[in-house]
Image 1 (cartoon, rainbow, N blue to C red):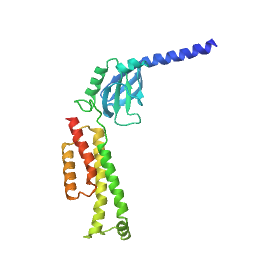
Image 2 (cartoon, rainbow, N blue to C red):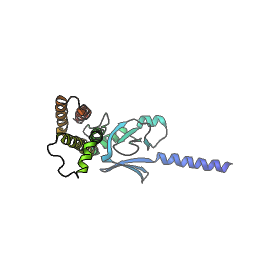
Image 3 (cartoon, rainbow, N blue to C red):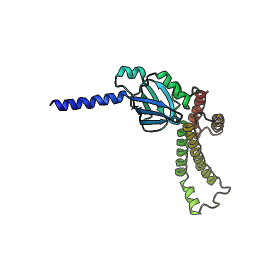
Image 4 (tube, helix red, strand yellow):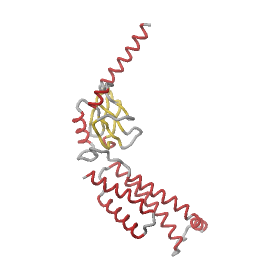
Length: 235
């Protein structure tokens, strides 16, 4: 009976010892978690959206302690742009210095993302608008699209208002899909969005609402506001 207890105690002791030996290394490309010299986990610096003091529930935990007060005092949460668990909790010896080192090495530096996550959502909203626009177009203009298909498509739109409306309605949806994909890619790869983008969306949205108030241009208010809010956060 004593031998199993000793074996279990040994395993638990080794587990606690291994946890206490976790350490963190920051280089130009990765934030690395190591067990002594052995690498266990790495997070790409370019994948870091934000870093904050404090621990977080429902996160990927790589703390080097299981003592809650220590985790509360030394806890740091790294917010990733991608992946299943987008929050990684660590417990460096000096959280303030650790956060500054990550900010110096990553796009979080210069105040971008600090004090609030630079959430990646504007491109997704534009993608959703483009998808809805295209689907509605295919449903609403299905009769005209059937005519174009039966005529083999070639030169089937020529000064015919109903066909031109169907064509441009659906193509506008495709254009928003492309723009949304591009904005989403920029949000992930480069935190600073081009300045002209917010003003372009504002101009398109206002013009559309003035000329066609009973239309889907109201949906563009959300990404437009998001672009201005993000620009303010990046300033």
